[in-house]
Length: 306
Image (cartoon, rainbow, N blue to C red; front, side, top):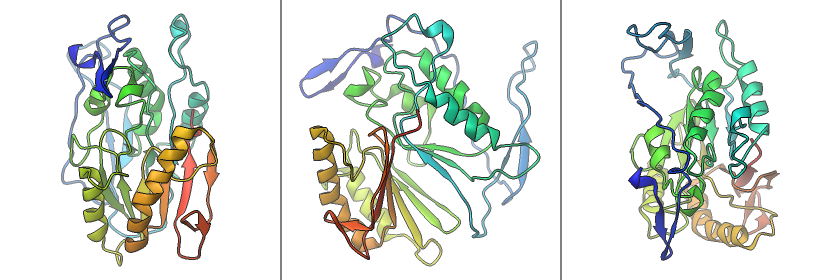
């Protein structure tokens, strides 16, 4: 509990609600699977024979295929959690009823007897909106389990997962529940078919500051991309790069991101930037320096999930 009692930033401390309504999460198990056959489907369950009715239902997933092929993926930000009825006595915690509809819509497309219509989910930050209320994380995992048990569920950090806006969580639950290739750094990249995805942090080590480790890592990663194997390059972060929002803080953030990232995107031929943070959908033309140009980058704002 002591490591969730406040984030020290800007000379002040943000307190957590967690002490008042703390619920122990129990054990969190992480299993790394090796030697999977490309494209093969695997069935699994989890639990313990020591418990009565101690096993989950049987689930399945397909190992990533090595061959390049057309595919689809799902991306959104700011999902949150639809509150269970017995939690409504805590009105200070955010309720996101639309999150249930989003999760149900995705789960309805996944059936055990056929290949999924999308290969992975990319959640662009602001994961559970637990903001110090520990049971929210359990609710969130219950919400997305029908999806995350079948296809990879990838995340980036948002302002309500780390930092002041996490109300004292300071990323502790976030980094305990999600593991990254360079854990505990929240930035990473991966290849899938023709696509190279670069997940960046816009939070504690903001990618828009050229002096940060995340910015330096981003340039190194982009420079190393094999454009023959992965001609499409997508950068995914939480905060939006272009927005029509008039909130002054968000406008300034978008200007910083444009100034820092557009030169890199032009230099390395990035195709798309995806972000959330602002709770609506917007899509730009091929843009650079706030102008539509033929060789610009498309920026998409997808903060609409919850």
